[in-house]
Each structure stands twice: as structure tokens, then as C-alpha cells.
Length: 314
Image (cartoon, rainbow, N blue to C red; front, side, top):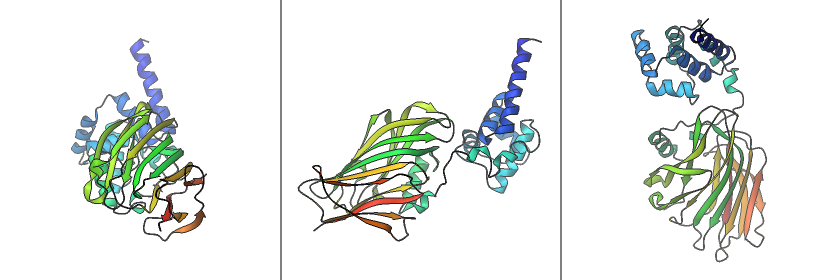
């Protein structure tokens, strides 16, 4: 048997393993590679069979950024099996809820439930061609917020440890929502550890800014990565709280809020919320102390929802 025949057998064996064990996106990507079909050719062959699927959707499916769920998408997967000359049901079965693709990805909550005025954030995600699930979840996140002498949110810095739950992740999308009066066009994005700033977009009316932080490597599912970034704001009025929404469960979160000596609050408290419109719960008084005039919270195992610290001025 020639070398070409040996390589073909090895490729078929690899495809068989991917179809057997999944996850779906890996099996699809392997099938595309082994069959030597580009996405536009697959799209054309599906169209010939009466199934219309966008190139973006096909790309997201093979990356693991999205899963086919709607009836028409599941029908397209069935046709994909035919186009790629695969056993009937070999891809479809990998979309079952118990599929390996779901293993390792924590329970999630939708973006709409975590932010006020979600349309602005969704618009920015669309402009940056980023799915709501960026393929990462938090292992550990240390965040420091600085409140200035005008009671304004002056800056915030983050040291972030993340784990990829799909292959090919090479960036993180950081969202900054300023206080009332924030001018996101004047907010500065800083990348200071294992990343660099990519595209930046903002929605002026909502005071929201989205920034791509580009990694130095492309991650595979299960890989961890450490990076640091920050925002310099100072453009808004009085700040009275800082909140962070978590789409995924798991991981540790530490939030420290420091105040300028010329503007100290009279009361600070931590709180939780199940969603942006839910009542606040788990309120706990925090004592302003220490040389750096700050308060903090530590959450060992984050749940999907919102954590924050609020403070009152005189």
C-alpha cells in the first residue's frame, strides 16, 4: 500500500473517532477537512438540496461558537451528513443535551438577563462579529475599581484567568458600562498583560464600550490563559455602585473598590441579583478600612447572575 493510501486510512480513522466521541464542532471540522470541502462548497451543495444555511452559521458550527438548535438547522445537519458522505445520524446524535460538547462548559445565563439596556451591548457584539458565548469562562478574576476625588469612576483594572470551552479562542471581549454621563469615546482601554487591544466600539447614548483583547496564542478547549487589562474613564458624574454580571457559573471573583481620600463614602455594602431587573439580595455591610481606603468582596464559587458593591455619599 502506498503512502497516499496510508494517509487516507489514517484520516478516515481520525474522522471515525471524532464522530464516535465528538464534540459536534470537532466532528464537523474533521469531516470538512477529510472530505476536502470548503464552507462555500458545502453551502452550495446544501442549497441544491433545498436547505439554506449562511456561511457565518456554518463557520460558527465548526468552531463551536454556536450549536444548531432550531428545526431548520437540525434539518441542515441531517443534509450535512449526506453532503459529507457520513453515516446517517452521526452528526445529529452529537447534538443531544448529553453530548461531550457540553462537558466542561458551566451553566450559563443569557446576556439579556444580566445587563440593563441589553440592545446596546448586543449591537456592539454584532459589530465586532462576536457571539454572546465567546468560548471562555472565568477561573479567577481580580478586579480593582478606583473612585476619584469627584466621586467619579476613575478607572478599573482586571487580572483575569480564563479557561476555553471550545477550540480556536484567541480573544476576549471586555465590556465597560460607565455611569450616567459617561462619554465612551473618551474612555481609554489598556492592555498590560499577555494581550493587546484590538477593535474598540462604543454606543454613546448608553455609555457602553466594547473592546477586543487579542491573546498571544490560540487556545484549545481546556486551555487556561492569564491576561490583564483596564479602562480609564473619569468622564461621568457621581458613581454610587459597581456591578459585574456573570454568564457562567464557577470560578473565583474578587472585587476591590478604593476611594480617594478627598471623597469617602459613609456606607458600603455588597449585594447580589439574579438578573438586572430582580430585587437585590444577600446585602452585607462592608467596613471602609485600611491605608488605601477600600472595601472588597470575595466570591469563591460564582453563580450566574450579578455581584456588586454599592455605597452612599454624605
